[in-house]
Amino acid sequence: MHKIAVIPGDGTGPEVVNEGLKVLQAASRKFAFKYETRVFDFSGQRYLNTGNLVSDSDVEELKKYNAIYLGAVGDPNVKPGIIETGVLLKLRFALEQYINLRPVKLYNSNFCPLKDKKPEDIDFVVVRENSEGLYKGMGEFKDKGTKDEVAIQISYNTRKGVERCIRYAFEYTRKRNKKKKLTLCGKTNVLTYAWDLWERTFNEMAREYPDIATDYTHVDATTMWFVKNPEWFDVIVTDNMFGDIITDLGAMIQGGMGIAAGGNINPQGVSMFEPIGGSAPKYTGKNVINPLAAICACGMMLENLGEEKAGKAIEDAVIKLVRTKLKSLAAGKMGYSTTEVGDLVVENL
Figure 1 (cartoon, helix red, strand yellow):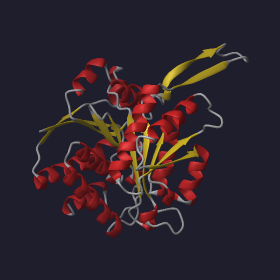
Figure 2 (spheres, rainbow, N blue to C red):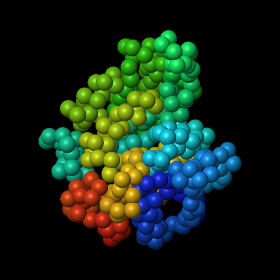
Figure 3 (tube, rainbow, N blue to C red):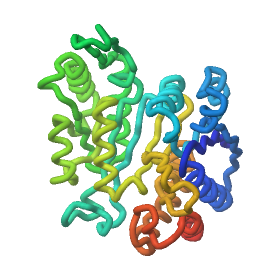
Figure 4 (cartoon, helix red, strand yellow):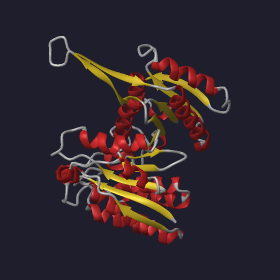
């Protein structure tokens, strides 16, 4: 029995989660596994009503579950950063979800903004360190509010944190078994302390994996190659900040936020799966948002729970739909409503 905590979130989050749960139910029948869900309301509206976000007792409760399925958080009536820090970052840090896993895979060339790129050209994975770096929230103001003000933001990197992320990336590259190439993406020429640690750790660990080819590219060059030669990449490992940036570019070249899913992974604990797009409040309640990213996140979740056949079947159904049915991956332009897209995935399982 898989125990799944569901966080519908804000805006269109509940709509896309509903479609993911619809597909989950169909997959459980087809592949004969059992699960139960419980909904947790960690939304902007709850914060506005009560002032509560995710408490320490909430975290302890979530530790009883096998996985978390998240819609999206972000409410236009709440100051930016409050929900993101109080829900997303709180959960990632408290549950030690130290890997952010982002597959970048093109399903249909018609939805790719790059000229002459085919599905076989865009098929790579970004492994992003998810618990340290600039997102640790460390720093200070000096002389705040004066003309001599200084704002200091610290990129906090530990050997333990860097090492476990890089090892996960090497193991994932081996398991993925495609080009068996792992690229370190950083900025060693400027960020000399943090990236000296990353580069040394990467090179030392590479000796343990002689079957994996390795290389390095600066983050600015990585964005260039994503656009010009995405076929060069297999698996990329990088820090929290750079990973956040390059995965959004990855989402665009794979067809947009409507298809981009990700996992916040604790290999020994509770992982959380989500569409990487935001809550898209302007589309709330209109039944036009694309639920495929959330459905793909559901597939990733099942794979992580050991239901590999069900996870692959969901991805295959999405691929078929994207290649044969949808006019676009953008909200309101798919040719189908949100609920109809969910139904089509179920039909194609």
